Length: 101
Image (cartoon, rainbow, N blue to C red; front, side):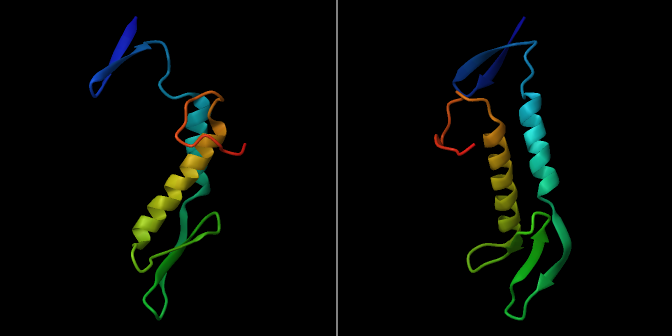
């Protein structure tokens, strides 16, 4: 049996027995989540900067043109990208070709 998945104007045939996300990539996402979570309490400096720490040691803070929430979201997205890139099988077409493994 083949499942057809609609993506915009194209349809992609995917065998029904194929798992949509491999265990390796699912584990990579879980590693990123478990290694990058906010710890401690929100702090505020005298200059108005608010910040907190990520469990990896990175200090996440607001800036002149971004919010603390934006920095947290970017940090988590980058962590997820790095984990997925490292775990992705060779040969998958990529937006960024050169990723050091």
